Length: 355
Image 1 (tube, rainbow, N blue to C red):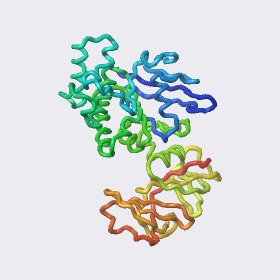
Image 2 (image 1 turned 180 degrees about the vertical axis):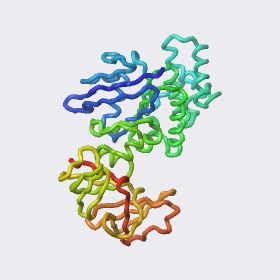
Image 3 (image 1 turned 180 degrees about the horizontal axis):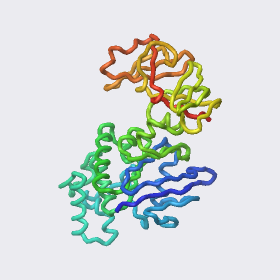
Image 4 (image 1 turned 120 degrees about the horizontal axis):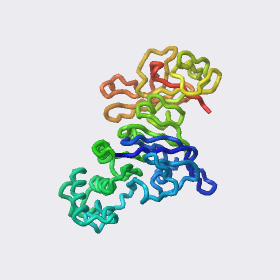
């Protein structure tokens, strides 16, 4: 059985630097859980505390309801895959995979049998005698995963393992990792700064910023209903317009801005008379006649990105605006230098307290 992982008010301080502060969340057993945030936000520190390489300066970490306080990495039901993969270059693939079993006293025959089972699982059957240098980047990635799974961990910790791969291979490995996690049932805790990676693979995601936990939710919840301005701007592309809340009624907030009155779903802590920001995704905007509630911008450039194009413009107060246009409608895109107006449904915009 895979184990749950719980953090209760966990903090980590290095000298005078507060790396992680008061983090609380629970990863369910068998879940693919990602920790997402920019470099330096504390996500790798959290992973190293779960693994036992660091002991938190405050709070508790439980794995499978057992308190991990004082237990080192070899005493925890976890395995960790580092960004560098750390395969042994002079050791054939099967010995790399079975390395942890040798330390546990398994015979050579037992180790080879288990390595072959895992090679089949990761679709590298027959590659056991090859050296790591003979494999592609994606194949080495799979060997590192098999080596971690060989010791039968209840929790697999992955520290940005795909960051060194090219885009196509990263996208392929995302699908493979997700499939592998579902087949094994092992709890995955995955560290990344890549929002698309987290959204594509995860059951749930914890978003971090400057050592502070911003929000935990499903990919859809984070994208559609961000709880903080940081989540709104970090998870996906969005447009942000500052203003002041004039009313909140039936879950809809009206915001007075320099480009007119705008309405969207009221987020946590939004109150009438308080400063706020109005957020709307580029794909939620569509061409409309100019008028109240519409956003009118001067188009500065259009970036073609394959399945869609992004029209970049500025509102009359200088605020940037991005609108997503499907490639099938690209012929109707406004011309550069022209003024165009865009509307949206209230339910597709959100208003969040500012400051």
